[in-house]
Length: 102
Image (cartoon, helix red, strand yellow):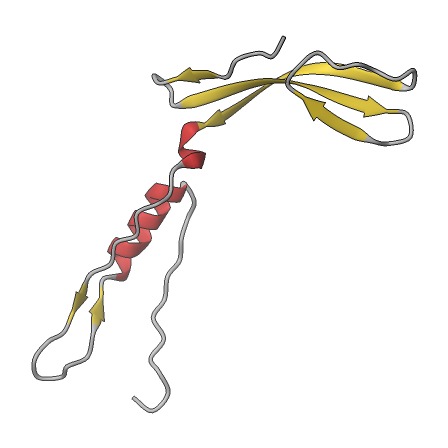
């Protein structure tokens, strides 16, 4: 019988139960149900715990200001970097390169 996925809303994780089947010849496969094994295969049951945020699509936000005298865009790099870092859970380094001839 297939195990259900457990979702823990308190710590924001999901736990998947599955079997990892390893073969003597180096092959490997996975299944959510109890496996039928060949003579040269062994299985182990795994609980795979992942953060639910892995399935969220980040919302990107940037601020562009165009001052009247120069009419050159101003991008708030710190806000964009912070939003990406928070959404993805990784450090982000953003830089702005001026186009050639400007």
